[in-house]
Length: 80
Image (cartoon, rainbow, N blue to C red):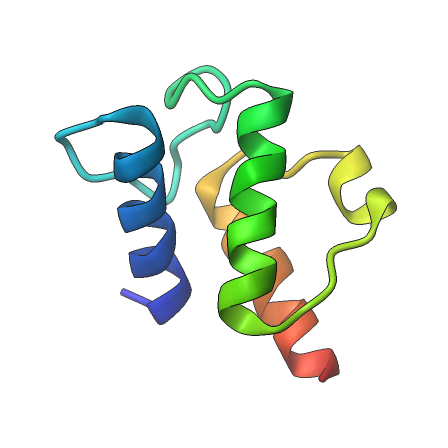
């Protein structure tokens, strides 16, 4: 698994008190129970961890799955 996936797994477990690991196909809202604020908090953690900037438009169509979030972060990292 990718470094970003592992970071997301750890962060989501800490933020939601989940015991089980996430899956790439997990939906942030439906499967993991994250609301808009939870997704923004996760985005803040990712920005800090990977020294990237996520713009409002990046999150406007809030990535719906873990896979989409990983892809978004990978693309932002490659821009730096």
